[in-house]
Length: 232
Ligand SMILES: [Zn+2]
Ligand SMILES: [Zn+2]
Image (cartoon, rainbow, N blue to C red; front, side, top):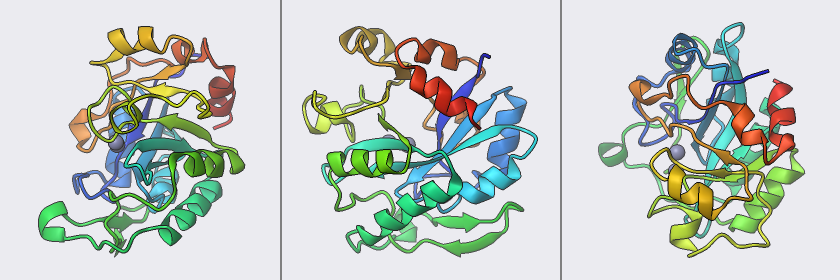
């Protein structure tokens, strides 16, 4: 089975996410583009995951996810087998936030929505700031919940494992690496032994991926990813 994916999409809960990134808009745009499976990965919270999953029924498969900013300010994608597992991780992240509040004038609102795109709340903590869990903690907590751990956009010069740590620690257990389309050529060679995912990191509707990245290519290096995604 070929699965076309975009496993890195931000909703209106992310401070940098456009307010048009509502559960139904994300789902309908992904459906129109012909994607089979998407993940909603807001910064440090799974607060809109349930709403997106509910809105997506019968249209597109949704992987519950979070993009965690580790204590080292490294962005890591954590994918979970269930909404409950993602929400459990989200609670852990909330307990480990550093108390910085969102300034809506600078970052915009962090909107919590239901599956009808109605606003049901606003997150007060600034979700993009680092949590008090290091990259090994985040990996372990993801694995404990049956999830996949994928360092995000490793070819970027900020908020990435290569930029912030200087290298990919060989003892860090990763299921795949996310490389942006721009970095694919160079980084795929450099990290040839790893499975690679390429997603949009969309914060605006128009940036959601076209039907191009297919999971078949990623699983050549790691069957676990395919098996995980096929369960949805
Ligand atoms: Zn990121
Ligand atoms: Zn992101």
